[in-house]
Length: 98
Image 1 (cartoon, helix red, strand yellow):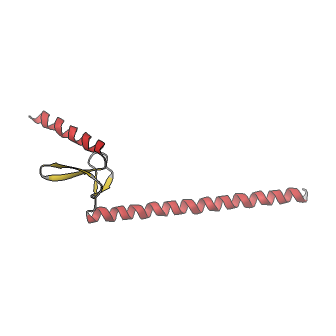
Image 2 (cartoon, rainbow, N blue to C red; image 1 turned 30 degrees about the vertical axis):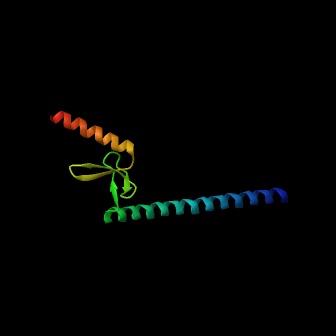
Image 3 (tube, rainbow, N blue to C red; image 1 turned 90 degrees about the vertical axis):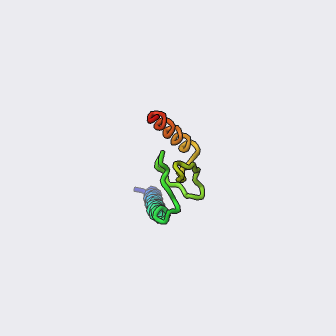
């Protein structure tokens, strides 16, 4: 092998190794952030600052939720679409009863 070919080969190996380590470092940070975000969300749910949307199951903060009142109790949603689906379900269940 010529000296120039070896140099190119070594350069490619170092480049590949650098890309691999950057990828692993980025993925590690992403996984750690996901774990941290999940723990933070669980803490907010436990404190009562976040509630679960009864339609889609998403967790929403009490401050930013879309609300409606059913039987004197506030029901929280992530969007107007989920609220409207919920209201249609309630209407259809009420019409089945009466």
